[in-house]
Length: 297
Length: 303
Image 1: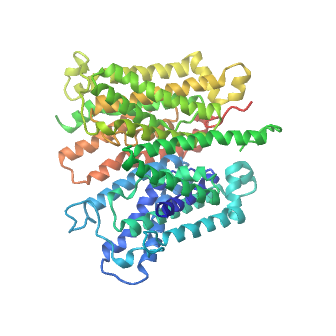
Image 2: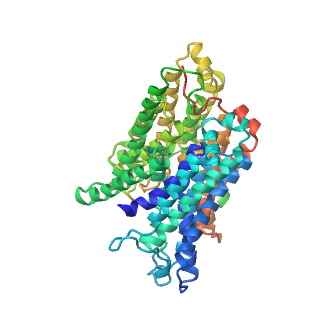
Image 3: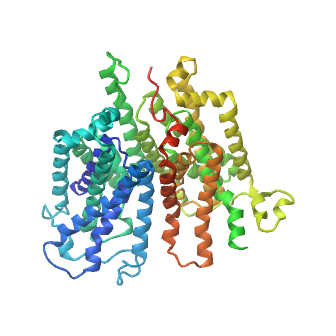
């Protein structure tokens, strides 16, 4: 379960910061894939390289890849005013095509019996195992560290505060001189960075090679995790545990009760919907006595 | 048949899923509700239609089932965003995920099966013209969609119903004050959007490519949402945009048939890349976006 929690935690913390600033980056899936591709470039191009620097470099490259992919969306939003929702999602579809292109051509393992997958990574490229006997690796630590950083950033720093004001009251933010463009760039870059990191951790972790099935919808589950966690870094920590449990429960249900995996998606979708409806009750209880115009976020 | 004639003949059919879904979304957005669950509703419609046809229900029943299923999903969405006033963006995403899950659930055992499409109805004489003749040889749904485009365009711009709908979208408070049942209007608009998305999915699944496959909608619902923005909301431009994307998805096929040395993945991502490009081009004109856009889009009615 910790194995599943790691990537979910990583990939949900980033976009959640954006959602708080009302920057709807829903392309975490694409940023995850690009992170995986960037990270794989080391083992694919330098398959015999050795040394303890390789797996950290892999993670860094992954973060870079995700951030670059998100930067396209940010540029398009800031420069051309295009909806970041649509652009980031479209880029996810493109990312998957890039992945297919690489795996069917340039990056295909020459000894892989023609399967669309890359070479297996060398030992130094694989993330060190954290708990002996399991497959839990250092990416969980990275995810926890990132959650801590997200907490400090959003709850304690001025920059994080600016982002939140931009999300809650865009006009107030612009009167206060907080740049909207900068908030968009920052939100998307952080989101891309985290998603790319998760992608890198996935290829260099339990999978150990770049495959077509590298993205199992983490990017979309991340949206759910982010909201279930109330967009709060600590809430997301709890939510990613819950969601990891659900997807593992789904795997087990599939095996033991012969239920299709799709039931997990149905469950996740309804979960989010119910949560969003429930939020209304919470909000109304607070706002009922003083219905000031424009008080709602 | 040469490439040009092929593209001319098939563009309208390829455009129809985009067109139907966009028209539905247009009506919903005009009433002030941003429905991002179109993709999920389309996928659900596609699967329901396929299952119906596969079990011998016929195409009419298939479209009815798709419209009903997707319409019900739209009502769930409406309950959340209108009843509970939940955030429209996130609810749309949730509905999208839910729709994908439901359809995967129903469609799992029908993977890779095929059914027969619909016969083409030709316009006499016109369809016998060289090169452009194929344009006038389309199936019934294409003709109906074109009629629907005209009808929706006229309704929005010329009728009282259209005025009520637009007033609801532009200024829900004012509309409420003069006695328009805002929530009911929005409910109908969202329901209509859902039914249309279901039809769009049904068309893609049982007429255009009568084959059941995971990912048979492949982002078309999202492109439809983008089309509404790209068209900056009038109907004629949506038709134009839908045709552009129809032609684009065909250009990939044509290029492959002609043996153009481009990777198929590049051609497959062409519609998405063009969407991004067009979104950038259109949205860059901020003033126009504000003028033509729907003022209260995404905001609930506060009483």
